[in-house]
Amino acid sequence: MACYILLFIAGLILVVFIVGLCLPKERVVICQTTLNAPPENVYNIVTDNDNWHYRKSIQELRIVDRNGGAEKWVETSADGTTIDFATREKIPYSFYSFDMESKLFKGYWTADIKEIAGGKTLFTATEYIQVKNPVIKVLSYLFFDIKKLMADYQNDLMLEIEKRNSK
Image (cartoon, rainbow, N blue to C red; front, top):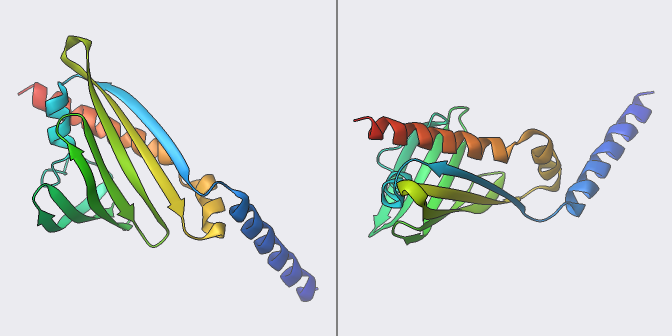
């Protein structure tokens, strides 16, 4: 009986592995919101890694290198997950991107920042994730809601803008 259980588990792992190999190499998630601030203000908040405390999902952010406008930093999430980041590109007030990598994935994130009517900003973030292990890739589709994480970040950003606007 134990032999059948082991065969079943091995077969299940093999199926999950094959499904992981068949899934797209990269997950791409886009999240967009309108912010009640001009693009310059939004850009300055988003790119300021010294003032990260408004982000509820972050326990710690430590800058490890600065080279002009480019930075390398490490974030530790509330659940203890550590992710390394590095500035990819900055175009003042309109675009920002960075690379990211952890033990389980690598990828990059972009933010398009566009002025719209009424002095507001259309903020569009896109996250590109490649999960390193095919089994973990399957699990990431089931248990890692990138869209929710991005929406939570944008909500934190909106609350920070509202706080600054009320001063």
